[in-house]
Structures are given as C-alpha cells and as structure tokens.
Image (cartoon, rainbow, N blue to C red; front, side):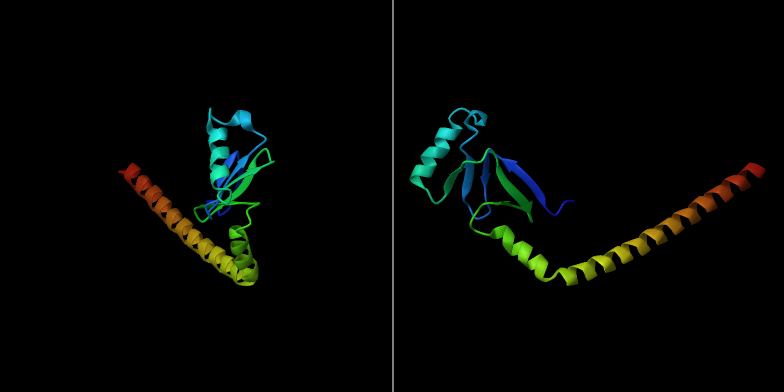
Length: 128
C-alpha cells in the first residue's frame, strides 16, 4: 500500500473543496466540461481556479487529494507532522520491521516443521 500517491489530472478537487483545472488542455475535456468549469469559476471564483498548467499535480494521502499548488496547505500539515516526529517514526519503523521479521522467521520455521513431518509421513507410508 502506498501512503502517498503523486499524480496529475486536468481537473482535481483539493481536500479543502477548491477545484483546480487546466486551462492548457481544453481539448482533453469532455464536450462542454471546460466551459462548465469556466462558468462555475465566474460564479464562485474562490471555489474554482483555472491554472496555466497542462496538468494539476496532486498527492493522495489518507483518502484525500491535496493539490500541490493549493494555498490551503493541507499536505504541508502532514509533512510537518511527519518531519517533526521523524525520529519517533524511524524508531517505530525499526521496531515494526524487527517484529515482522521475527514473525516471518517463526512462520518459516513452522512451515519447515510441517514439511518435514509430511515428508516423514510419506516415507513411512511408502514402507508399508
């Protein structure tokens, strides 16, 4: 599972509710879609923003899309949280990896026991 997914599109609605759309890609819109967005932008200029970018960059995180150029700074909140707690997060990841490794090693040992027991049973049954 990817925690962060960086992508781009001609229309993206940021988690804060503002819709960004590309003014350079009119030919990529469905018929009437670009004009509709322009109309909405005229009616609600604080909710619809046309960019001069060919693609609106965004990051998906925690089930939300955050437009990179949006002034809401939604993604920056997560980045700041992670950066301020990076040492704690690194320690957590080290401990988690160690525990996962131990569990995987135990599972492997158990699987090997089962395989050996199965092989022994097959050998015994062949002798009969």
